[in-house]
Image 1 (cartoon, helix red, strand yellow):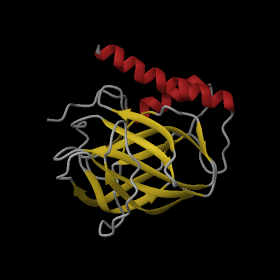
Image 2 (cartoon, one colour):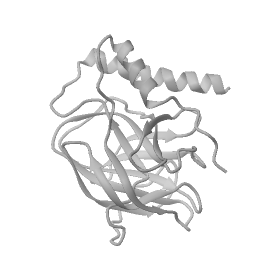
Image 3 (tube, helix red, strand yellow):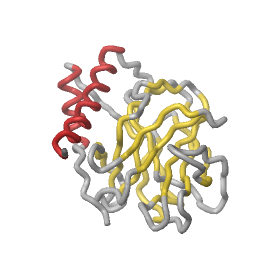
Length: 222
């Protein structure tokens, strides 16, 4: 059974970041969004789904998230990880209903839920990267054959999947044909728009605001 998400809304989050930084903040920005596609589930326990992308420009990562079909919360929490293309772990966060920040999706009646990355100010240099998340049998959905919109500067390179070999997550080394443009469970959140280089002080304030929002939600839940 799903539990209704207790996270803050996108509008409130952006307003909070703007006030905290003392200036207008256009972001954060979704790495990808989907407007349509095929809802998929897995019959295998501890399966990893994800996708590979290329960035042409340096980008500052402030969060990792998971797709919430129906916008009614996740069935369980998800470890979401960012890897380099050769399998080096770069960032990891746990996305759960208690602390998630909700961002709207173009997919009908759905949203993205984001948690704070363990490396919230990681700067991606131009290159190839892999997003991945663990899913379990008859658990939260993900999307294949997606009608995809990418953040400017990103290129979709293909889906990734694999078996889960241990906590917190394993690198999805497979690229299985037959899913079209997918698998979209995990997602990434950027602080800056193309050509925009955030000032370090503003980035720190924005990141502190995101962490404070999640901490406040955790305390209220407790």
